[in-house]
View (cartoon, rainbow, N blue to C red):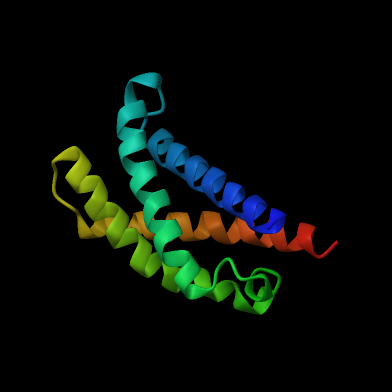
Length: 124
C-alpha cells in the first residue's frame, strides 16, 4: 500500500512539474497563470488516475519491471485526449489535436523519467 501511495504521489508531482514546465516554456509561469495551469493539471491527473490503473500501471509486477515501462505511452494515448477534452470544457474552448499530441508526449516522457527513478529506488 505504501508503494502505491509513493507511486501515486510521484506521478502527481511529475504531472505538476511537467505542467509548470509547459507553461514556463511559453513564458506563462507567474502567479497570474495559476488558474490556467490548474485547468490543465487537474483534468490530466483525473484522466491519468482513471486510465493508468486499467493498464496495470499501478500493479507491483508492472511497476518494478523495466521491460513494462512501454505501457506508459499507450496509457497517454488515452489519457491525453480525455484530459484535453476536460480542459477544453473547463476553459470553454476547443480541444486542439496538436496540443493533445504534444501534451501527451511530454507528459509520457515525464512519467517515464519518474517511473525509471521509482524503479531504481524500489529495487534497492
